[in-house]
Length: 369
Ligand SMILES: [Zn+2]
Image (cartoon, rainbow, N blue to C red; front, side):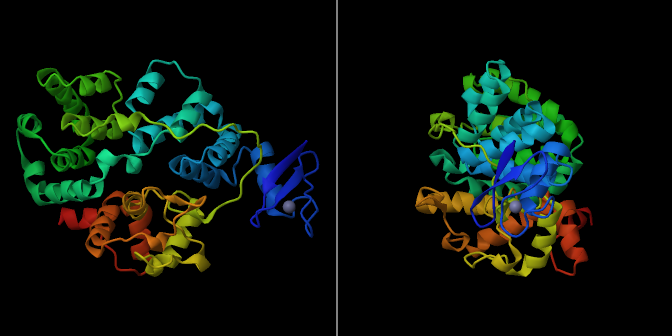
């Protein structure tokens, strides 16, 4: 069997699965080229070598709603970890990056096959594409600011249950909702109590959307965020929309794009540390270090996606992603998001950065003192 692999130069090569020979010029001997190495790893080695890259690539293409590439990586992922695992990750990504209540319900009711879950998660409209969330970044930053300002109170209340109940009954804006979320995120033992309080509020407020959502009984921290958004009426029908379906006739292993190397992979973290000083708003990212954070889970990527969509109405232009430097990223927002990023990625990114000699914010240590 011949397995097609997209080379870094864009050309499609074929690797013979039986003997590992590849038809790229120059290295047509067993195991001598990257194409042969990735095919052998996926088919004969359960992805032990390239798992980080494959999983990261799949996540990025789901975020990009690129049906063809996401399906290609999804097949690689399913081959090394099973279709079930790929569907579970797709469901998590759907909760994280979309607000598609119809999809959540269909998954919960068991109406979809694993393959359908994967396809729908890829095609589902992402949150930065929803008009009703156009001020998400401002609300998110303000929610964090509020939590940061009130953190002493939040952490010293003796009757936290009563305080939370009172807070939720007055909660009206997304930033107030996010303030609660930040508290719960840092105090996970409060996750289930808060979900239960939200349920009571849904009944009292006759908030059917919130009640239906909580009836899905997803008890993740992301579900708590969606529940809090629904509490303050932050949702619109457009969140249930999908990108166009296309027929997938291709079957190949895509190439590794620079954007798969972020904090999701060990190689990405190395590149991130090396390029750290060159990661700035409106300036080309360190291309020589092959770093590209547009589709990363880190707050730089999140900011770029929301701002880019707001400024251009789409993150694609003539088939390509808008360049990083074309998105206008206000400095105040950049600083706030960097600080918040250190709250979420302290262990994974900011401690290694500190160790490498960079001056970076470290949320938890500062917070503890
Ligand atoms: Zn080759």
